[in-house]
Every structure is written in structure tokens, then in C-alpha cells.
Amino acid sequence: MARDVRVVLVTGCSSGFGRATVPAFLENGWHVLATLRGAAERGPALVAEGERHPGRLLVVSLDVTRDDQRRAAVAAARARWGRLDCVVSNAGQALWGALEDVTPQELRAQMEINFLGAALLVRDALPLLRAAGGRIILISSLFGRAGFPLSSAYCASKFALEGFGAAIREELRPHGVQVAVVEPGRHRTGFAGRAAWGERSASARSPYAAQSAALAELTRAVAASPGPPAVRVASAVVALAERRRMPARVRVGRDTRLAHLMRRCLPERLADALWAVACARALRPHTERRAPAEVTS
Ligand SMILES: NC(=O)c1ccc[n+]([C@@H]2O[C@H](COP(=O)([O-])OP(=O)(O)OC[C@H]3O[C@@H](n4cnc5c(N)ncnc54)[C@H](OP(=O)(O)O)[C@@H]3O)[C@@H](O)[C@H]2O)c1
Image (cartoon, rainbow, N blue to C red; front, side, top):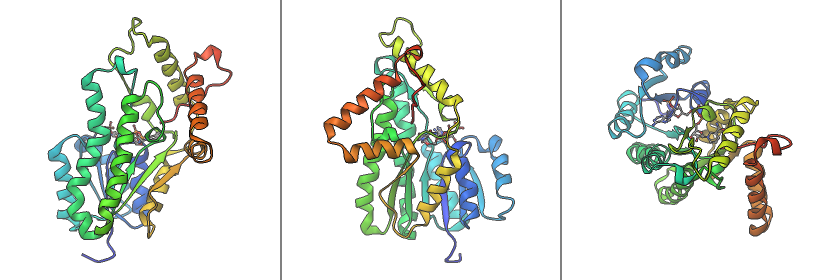
């Protein structure tokens, strides 16, 4: 295999950031192992993406919660190209709802997809990544750094991903593997529309019914409003993968950069107080709000 071949594995390529990342890597000369759930039915649309880049795109099934499929995806990179230079862990889903309205199974499933799926895929890929002096890019979120009400499961999964990324960044440094976290703000993808809700969130008897209704209204308003396109995140991911030294963190979007600036520049207690005001405003019923605030993810 030629030394200039660079192979990247991306998860969650059926839509959104993952889908936009595939052509972005191909156009930059990478060989791409694009993974998604149900490749047999949904793969062909993606395969068409690779027609202009013969031999550089392989599409395989990967549900990140499945041990066998994670191992098979890594084995596919080894079998086809004999190497793996970068893993982009992008697959994710949101679970909204107050903690008391979420079942233990729902909470576990959120961690399985957003955190364990990523951590175990990286674990499986590490022998190839170490051999290549490769890179790991974890798609986190603004909510990986800031807690938002009725999002505790999602925030916990992204905070876990951030802690995982920070730890393996140092653990793998002596082995020549670089790790970075991408923290997107709100972007225009299928994400808001696909979010799951806690089983009891819809119950009028829930003590959190008013907050849930406000969040549902807010997510609908956000989903219907224009936001930056997914390709912004895709471009940032490819640019990151191509840097000689990856920074620990990259933020994409005005909202996530603003939140970071607030944390960096203000005393902690003041930043916490301002964030509390922003959270309360965001979940005020629509009629009380002058303009819909944004819920990012
Ligand atoms: N859009 C935003 O505003 C935003 C902001 C911050 C962070 N993020 C993060 O960005 C990442 C991508 O989200 P997106 O905005 O591109 O949303 P999206 O369009 O809904 O894409 C999510 C992708 O994850 C996949 N996925 C979900 N569960 C999976 C599983 N168990 N195994 C494999 N794939 C799975 C989905 O596949 P299926 O089609 O099979 O469901 C889909 O391809 C997520 O980690 C999300 O948390 C998004």
C-alpha cells in the first residue's frame, strides 16, 4: 500500500455531519470507510458519493452499540487498505426529558450510543491507529461542556466523551496517536427531529410537564429555523484531521464559541449565573418569550 494513502473511518454517515464528512474527506484525497446502520438498504445512496473517487470509498454497516459490527468495521479497513489513519466518532442521538421522566433503560441506551459506542470503537481501532500514528476525532457538543435542563442524559453522555477524550489524549500521546474533540453548536441536520423523549415526558401528570412542553416547543422552533449547514462541521473535521498537530478542542458555531468565551472570560460564579438565566429563559413558555431562544446541542 502506497505510503500516501490515508484511511478514515466515520460513524453515523446516513445523515447530518457524518454524511457531509464523507465527500469532504474524499475530495481531500482520503480513502473513506463510511459506516451507517443498515448499509444494505441505505448504503447505495452513499456509494454514489464515491463514484468520482474510484476505489476510495467503502460503505459498511455499523451500529456503534454492537460489538460484532464495531470489530467488523475495523477489520474491513484492515482487509481493504491495510491501515487506519483516523477515526471520526460522530454517531449520536439526543434523549430529552427530565431525569424522573426517563427510564433507566433509556438512560443506559443514551450512554451506550453516545459514549460507550465511541469509546469501544476507539478501543477496537487502536492497534491500527497506533501503527499509523493516527488520529481520533470525537464529535461532542456545546452540551459536552454546559448542562442544560431536561437534557441530563445527553449532557452526561457528551461530558463523558469529553473526559474520555482528555484522558486518552494524554495516554496516547507517547504512542503517536492524537486526539481532538469537536464541539459543534446548533447546525441544520436531522438531529433535532430525531431526538427521543423520556417515556414519561408526555404525561400531563409529570411534575416537569410545563418544562417539557416548553422544550418541545423550543426544539420545534429551532428545527424550523435556518441554522448553519452540516458542511461547516464536515469541513472543520477534515481540516482538523489534516493538521500536523491537532488542538485538544475545536468549536464550530457562534453559540458554542460564545458560551466558551463567557466561561473563559468571566469569573466562574458569574458565568454560572448567566448560564442559569439563559436556561430559564429558554424554557419559559413561548408566550412569555419575545423571540425564540436557541436550544443548541
Ligand atoms: N446538529 C446539531 O445541532 C449538533 C450539535 C452538537 C452536536 N451534535 C452531534 O453531532 C453528531 C451528529 O449529529 P447530526 O447533527 O449529524 O444528527 P443526525 O443527522 O441525526 O445524524 C446522527 C447520525 O448518528 C447515527 N446514529 C444514531 N445512533 C446510532 C447507532 N447506534 N449506531 C450508529 N449510528 C447511529 C444516525 O444514524 P441513523 O440514521 O441510523 O439513525 C445518524 O447517521 C451527534 O453525535 C450529535 O450529538 C449535533
